[in-house]
Image (cartoon, rainbow, N blue to C red; front, top):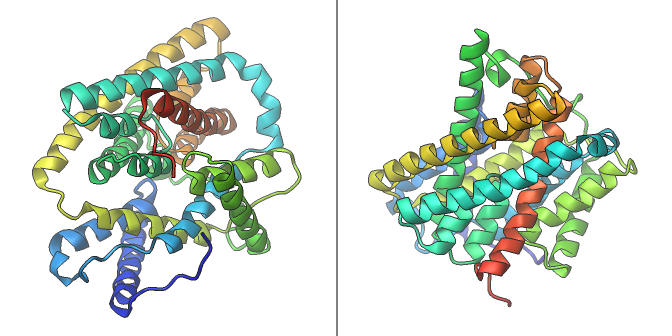
Length: 362
């Protein structure tokens, strides 16, 4: 798993060019205030490269997976590092809303799978892994191993995030009359983006998490192993992890570029179909989340706005920024989104095994 990364010269040059273009795409997306700018910007530029210049790629080119693995592990550590002792301490008092999030994950996944399977006509594996209400990288990694159509799966998962991170802030902007989220100038990163003191520790946790994830045969072990390792250490208060923003941005560029090259062969018709299905899926999930938020609000008196944001199946950071903009608790929102991601991974693994859609044993 940790053997030396070796590439033919033309593959190395192609990968270097893709990463450079991905970085420029990320910077451009960041300038425009795009959600997940470095990942989405890199992905779009990489996808355009394979669409417009496929003939210039070496025969049999594939993005180096061992190199990609390092940065997927870093993203796992980043997610796990958001679990703090304060968030753990608040969990018991939020039992009802966390239980409802669990139900939301199960119902939303079943609903989405039906949409992609029976309306979209996707095969069982592609519909199942495209339908998860979170866990983008986990869904892609597990779906690829299970034989899902990786191009369709990647498109559907990214469209879910793009649509949620567009519709939710837009809806609250219309409601409040002011820009919210990153469009409103909010940021939600480490306090010191230049902090490099913990880089060695971050890589160490990532490597240990990778090893444990594979030994324990965790689903999407390259991501979930480091994620759970970081969550245990950070949540217990044993370590304080603060990843420098530039390192997180680089990881997003690498992952975005590696996903974008898989769009080779994607047609406009395929993309239009995926967009219409994703819009139907996202609207159904938002309606389900609003209904559950109304029930919880009536039961517990918790802020309806905070609950709606907490149930929106978007990114942890952007949804927290929306909460910050509207002066509702970003910690409350972050806890529920972190929990949704963890529960999605667990539910995905259990449901895949029950339905016979998990990867074959090696």
